[in-house]
Length: 303
Image (cartoon, rainbow, N blue to C red; front, side):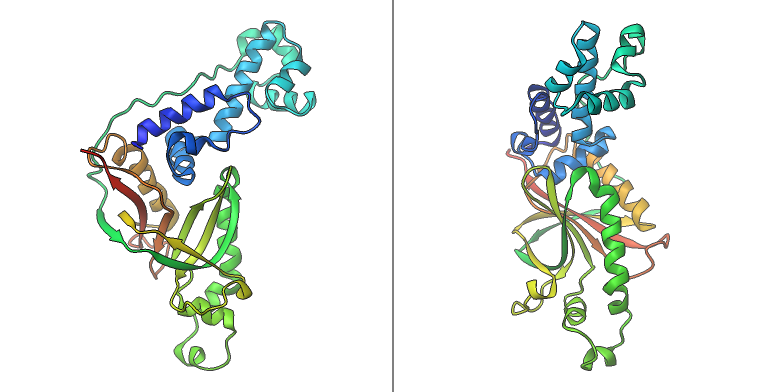
């Protein structure tokens, strides 16, 4: 699915389902990976899909209240469990309560449907190479997140694993590794270079699975007994975008370039199904010359 078409299909679907309890299957209607859809949507709009839905509901609810609708009926219609929870959300969005809005209708916060219409091809600032990857198994620590919480919780997940095991393993010298002084988990981390990948995989609904991973070297490893999970990258074409600079700032900048400039209107490639991958190299992640990569699954457009 061409990127801009997928975004506009997403908006069309959301607008038709604003009164549904859940819009979790929006990705299937857009014809795109839920991970890339949510990631790209937030980069393009500055908000998550669920926040977009909340904003649209609260604007339409305000319109109905100004027309005379009761607060309790409006709360139920727009998927709030109680009038109190509706009023709190209403106040956070509009800056006043539903009852006060009737006295000050000019203070309604307008939030109309978004339309994506840019058409930019290029990506001249991006350094990218293309590679056909064969199916590869990754192993590591995984956790399931909602798209709304991921931005804050994934760094916490990394910090937890860095402090508990990864940093210690990376500092071990060969003599320690060769001895019997390390645990099976530490051995697995070292042998499979766990921590060289951060990867997001589609799940059902509004969740996705994130992994701190490495390439599986030993298929006989009892992953589940060590608190690890094995995930697979399917065969496919990937664009590997280079990121140079302090890790978090540079990765964010490259992602913005990919979704706002490289993908929209790209004459040759469109997104394909597959995990979102970030490949990390050894080195000081705060160094101005630190290099890592973002791997994006693609397919060629039909001629």
